[in-house]
Amino acid sequence: MCGIVGYIGQKRAQPILLNCLSKLEYRGYDSCGIAIANSNLQIYKDIGRVKALEKTLPLVKGTVGIGHTRWATHGEPSKINAHPHSDCAGRIAVVHNGTINNFQELRERLAQEGHTFVSQTDTEILAHLIEKYLDGDFTAAVEKALGEIEGAYTMIAMMVGEPRLVAARKDSPLIVGIGDRENYFASDVPALLDYTSRVIYLEDGDIAVVTANSVAVRSNGCPIDREEHKITWSVEDAQKAGYEHFMLKEIHEQPRVIRDTLAGYISAGEPMADLAGDGGGLNSTLILACGTSYHAGLVGKYIIEKLVDVPVRAEMADEFVYSGQATAGNRAIVLTQSGETLDALKAIKKLKEEGCRVTAVTNVVGSTVTRVADRTIYLRAGPEISVAATKTYIAQLIALYWLALPYAKVDIKKLDSLVMGLRQLPGNVQQVLDNEEAVAACARQLAGYDNVFFIGKGINYPVAMEGALKLKEISYIHAEGYAAGELKHGPFALLGEKTPVVAIVTQDNTHEAVTTSIKEIKARHSPVLAIVGEGDESMAGLADMIVTVPAIDPLFSPVVNSVVVQLLAYFTAKERGCPIDFPRNLAKSVTVE
Image (cartoon, rainbow, N blue to C red; front, side, top):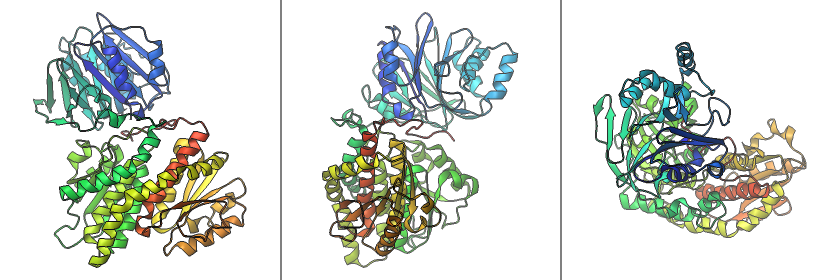
């Protein structure tokens, strides 16, 4: 969850570390800090965002340093608990992402040996363990310290007088950036785009020793060559390009994302995944994901069942780890936009142990999931900076349509119509974006409420869940997504004038049932915002607010309806003055349990 960076080279480290950290704040932003080595170790930390730390810093010389932006696990957000952490002598500094499961036991043992701790964090023990094992060889001391750690970690360590950074990775991402007489570490690619496009993705168990002129990687005690990759994202891709927020920019990028994703699949001959097993057609399958990706997976369940007429299970990856079984045709699709979601990676490990073939759908080339899955379907969404996922979710929907279409049990005329419908989606989404002021007007009304329900039915039920998630994520309004018919089984008790309902109304076999639910809701005096297709007049005089979307094949309606609920969440949060790109307590890539 946290973001970590490191620099060693010929330039002053301070501005580089701060710039890199500012690009990683989507991974955590409750506190931050940097450490730079000169003749002594200088550590500066603060609560809150990187820009707040930057305002308080003096000019710090030194060409070797590490930095951290935090999403708190052990210990509340505070200056003391912020990273980097150091040893008793103040010579060693460490930054860390992950959780050390046996930190309490190690802390007690080190305390008995005379070590004094100042923070509540698990990370601080790493610096003290390295100090304990230091006997002239800094790298060896780091390796011995890591040998005592149980749990997940990505860490970078530095020491006064040592012209190197030592880093290690287990269950959390870390990349090495290659420069000219300078090298970098970072949790994710966007941090390095200003400096290099050459990276090495470290793998679980790797220990990397980096100087200004060299990168040496070891795995299981042996030297190993890790392939260098060229990053195709540009600096401009990771900037706001004139938009007020990254979220709005990324919502508006969705027509291009759909085009790029489809073009990539067609030109590359994808779908790559042989979900049909031995070639007998697409059998029953299992879809696993977390959060927004899980909602995409639920839409995928409807897509595959509708087109291919086979049963599909869609489950939360974190729950599957503890209770699920891979009984659905020994095939699984795992959705993870970052490719580093710990719960998804744990689910894949379980699936592989059960002999299941796994297809990963991810946005990040070289991410961990691409190395552990059997096949990978790439999204062409580009870097997504806002914590609330938008364009990666839409790209996941496109990937799921494309996975299902080759196995669709429809005649050639219908198949051609479906492919044409996919190709028209960028224009359909652009129509929604061109009508965003109508959505903003509805959002200004929603912003005054404390509780909101979203309802949908059939293939748009997951869209209602996603709409509720987006609203609660960035506007801090309590919101719940329900299947339309479920409200009367309990939640009706909460309906009234102060509880609006956002209803997704689709021109398919669910239309009559959703309309009936809306009538029942209106009888309880709840305001209703209806999202309807062009030409549908059924909500006139019934709904209090109406947003229209292009009238398209109901199978593709989740795409345009999802863009509406994204915009609704965005403009509601803006009206309420919320920090849209960096909502409280959240982080972009969830790499802890």
